[in-house]
Image 1 (spheres, rainbow, N blue to C red):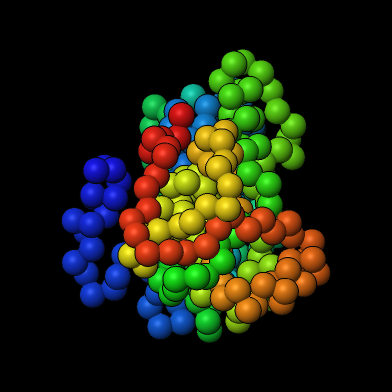
Image 2 (image 1 turned 90 degrees about the vertical axis):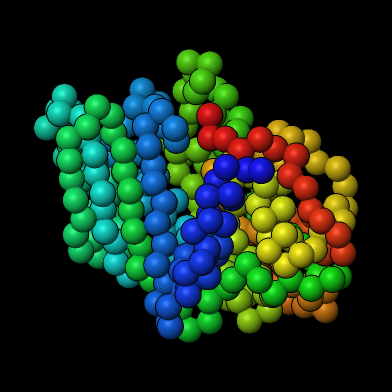
Length: 274
């Protein structure tokens, strides 16, 4: 069994169900992701500004994935005492500028010294019509936004001592806020693609005790590319043209990958970051 999934199951005895991108309490949604050195990034790959920006983006992605408006952030920052004053200023600038871009107010948190740079961010958001992972029905179309595979390819460049563009998907994910907000009425369920298409499709299907009929076989270079932060969505086939029209207006590529069917979904990827 996947260690992460097993741990979450052991923690899932609370009154508030665990399993979506964030916890829904009334109209408020609370989400948290960690962003740790040597697990999610290496400091020789990204500048402090880029590290802070991506850490904020991957957390804001959870709010957007649930059709919520991110409002507040709490930061947990564990940083090496050897970090220069300039690097600390750039880390702070990355947090602040990314938060301002999405209208998020940083309201507090905690900082400690550490042997490496580890970040933990809590996002507080609000939604009148949250998009959950539950709701998938047999025959529903399953699709994703954008083009997948770039993040894994760029990760491999970095691990081979190469470099990537500062606007690349691995450095700065492109969140699909406008598309989700406009299409929410027609979507059955959805989530962001953080662990890879195969892994997250399995999560979406398993949550609804269903499987996916793939339209075509996809290579692992696409299906196992994590940290894409595109959207995985499902909807009634009768709403296909409406969803396509919204995607065009939002300038969001939309790729249909299959449809929901009875059965048990399987994941073809290992659970990992790098």
